Length: 231
Image (cartoon, rainbow, N blue to C red; front, side):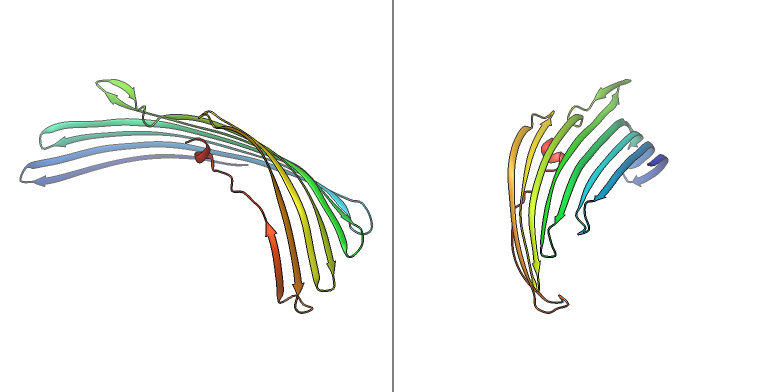
């Protein structure tokens, strides 16, 4: 757990004089931000045999809760003309991330090893901002700046890989499948399935493995960020 509370209060005064007259500014900036982070992790390993075959279970949860409030007030006298600027904004961001997975490592002998596993990931993002300014004693929303965005992502994945190692040769052949379901308030709703094959061959040029010749193939995707999914 990590939490912080950060208040800020700042006042500034400035005067600029020219042949046209004086430009006076008196500003007050009041800010308050809170940040809370809670995370937990579970790691369980069960050994299956004397060859070091094992099953792993991993689970984790993270919650980030951030809020902020800014109050900005400026009194400006520009060459005899009174100009006041009063505006404020409130923000809130809540992120929840949950992961649950299990992995199997099966050792058949010193040369052959099988790896397989499943994993589920849940991402929930909420981001809110509200801006308004004061005019003639009333607070007016700044519609062009306000937003309220919610976004959830569910990812289910499974993989299998075969590993071979003998003398100076090492090889790995694997396949991973992922199903993703996305739901966003901005109208971004998408479900898709992908397969990611991989193959790698390594040859050690000396016994210590200081120099290696490698040949590999991997397929992967880059997932869009939160802001790209909910512009």
